[in-house]
Length: 382
Image (cartoon, rainbow, N blue to C red; front, side, top):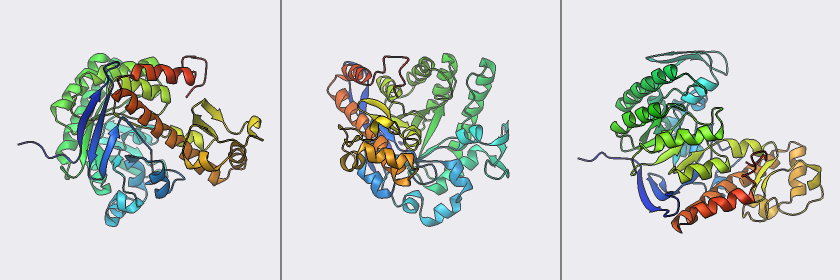
């Protein structure tokens, strides 16, 4: 008897030129084409964007953060509201992370034990405890379509000895979380592959999780300070051991060159706060490369932010106006810049899918790297 799954992955095409793939992620809140980029709505909101804005940029899956929502407003409030979709008033599929990354990056005085992590809240110093079971319990209440196992995200670099202990503990935590999951068939649970830059540990982590038959697999422990070549190796070491019929999610990656490289390796899903974070400081991701809208050269520039973009920002507003808004710290400027950057990445993944389906993905990568000056290691690029 086959396992009932809330989400399933349907493979569409593998690029003959590159080996990259397209597919469809079927979820309780609709089907989404892959590869895809997921906007991050940390506190049950994509910063500065309304639910209508999210529709207008044609976002698919959006991500919310378990740790932050556990602290405020609390999972009981969201459960009473009918789950995150009702609470946020969005129709999109939603993914929640495990909270583990925030515990290890934000929390004070953390202590990792076999039972879980003891730490203090970054808000008020309260003592808190997060176990694999607690992480699943919170996410069951939040009600997202896709939820994550609790893992440890070790610092980079870590010694081989520490990483091996961490991987083995993360595997044990994954098993406990799987056993605690109360909404199988309603919410899909992903396992998270760790192992740092060590190929045998990545293999061990991936194979142990695959044996547990999760609904999908995340590649964790990247974008934590390592150089780009190391990150590519981390993906290579993990993805070769992941099944073809399940979605693969590279966590915390939103730079254009990183997305392009990971897609070539077979990744389906991405998320990152990068596009909205840099937008709030005046940086735009455009077809001509990244630009800083605060520069004086845009003071009298009455053209669109990106002439090749179809978003609300580029259709209705000028670079000069956006420069004025950002320089005066107006919320509208942050909203319009965020809308554009998210739409840029969503359009990028659409172009990626087209190139894969037409068996020309390597050519597409070369064009993008050339247009955006990404071959120049000294250029800021993306």
